[in-house]
Length: 230
Picture 1 (cartoon, rainbow, N blue to C red):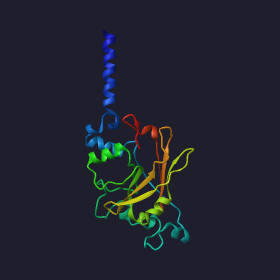
Picture 2: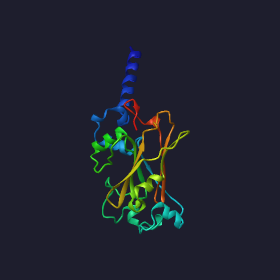
Picture 3: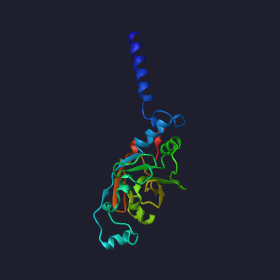
C-alpha cells in the first residue's frame, strides 16, 4: 500500500512540474493569459536581448558606399545624442513603455507562431506585417539615427548563418517607426532553403549603420506543439 502511495505521489509531483513549465510547453495559446504572453516575449527561445557593438570609423568611400553620405547624420555612436541612446529627453517611452538604460536591442523570430500569438494576447500595437512565406526577424529599439539608410543597404549586410550550409540573405527589409526616436527593422528571409531541427544553431547577424549585432538561435529549443516553429 505504501509503495502505491509513493508512486501516486511521484505522478502528482511530475504533473505539477509539467504544469509549471513555460507557457509554450505547458498549455495551448488559447489558454495563455497576459503574463504567459509577456514571458514568451521576454524569456523564450524566439526572443533575445543583445547589445550591438560599434564598428570602426569608415573612410569617406566606405561611408558613401553605405548610403549614409549626404544624409546629414553623423557617423558613429558618438554622433548620437543622449536621447537617442537612452531615451532620456526623447519625450516618448519606447514601444513597451520602458526607456532603455543602455543601447540594447531586442531580436524576435517574428514569423514563429508562438511569438505572433503572444503579441496578440499581450495587446501589442503596430506590429510588423508582411505578405508571403518568409523567415521574419525583427530588431526592435534601434536608434533611428543608425538606420537613416535605404532598406536595400541594410539588407546587404544581414544574414542567417548555419554551420556547413549557405548563408541566407534577406529578400526584403522594412522599417517601422517606434516612439522615442527608435525604429524596428524587419528582415524577410526566403524559405527556399529550409532551416531544420538538425541545424545546431542559426546565427542572425546584421549591420545597422555604424552598429553591428549577432544573435544565436537554437532550433532544438524552438519546438512548439511538437514541431519546429520558426
